[in-house]
Length: 204
Ligand SMILES: N[C@@H](CCC(=O)N[C@@H](CS)C(=O)NCC(=O)O)C(=O)O
Image (cartoon, rainbow, N blue to C red; front, top):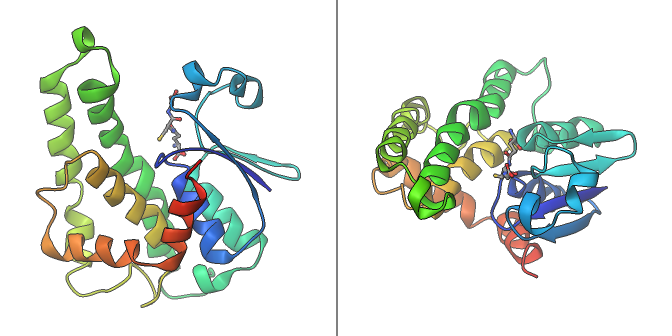
């Protein structure tokens, strides 16, 4: 298995999952954005995005999808749910929610507040998407009022997928308005040895 990664980017989801599951993998850490700073990567992934992940015939570009793949392929059900589990629908929903609903507005904020050159920045757009992201945390905020983890009263890759979105929000300094239970959940996740090993692994 090989994972292409940039520091703290969405590829941290599969990196964190690989570390939690204690699977063997090769890691290539590149400068961000690889499209401009590591152009040979375009021959590997024509999208230029990370993560990029290869495992035999499997070639994957979706961070939460790779986490789901690892559970299924390597039968790591201690980190995932099966269709017969009562909260399977909720589990899948959090996995998809993590990127389609949460990370998406964050990346618009990132682009128009930090990544674009000064003259192309759009402070109004950035602030709108910051607010949109925070509003989209409502479902999670309510869920975490009564729960320590998202599904089945235990840590799963759904927590990795959602936890990463919260962590990205913290890196972007848009976490000041996180609800106390959501902030506490993120801090619990960051204390996990698997998360800390992933942090170590990405240091080059
Ligand atoms: N939906 C994909 C998105 C992948 C993605 O857009 N990654 C960003 C980094 S977080 C990227 O590679 N951006 C660089 C670029 O678009 O050139 C996922 O969840 O992995």
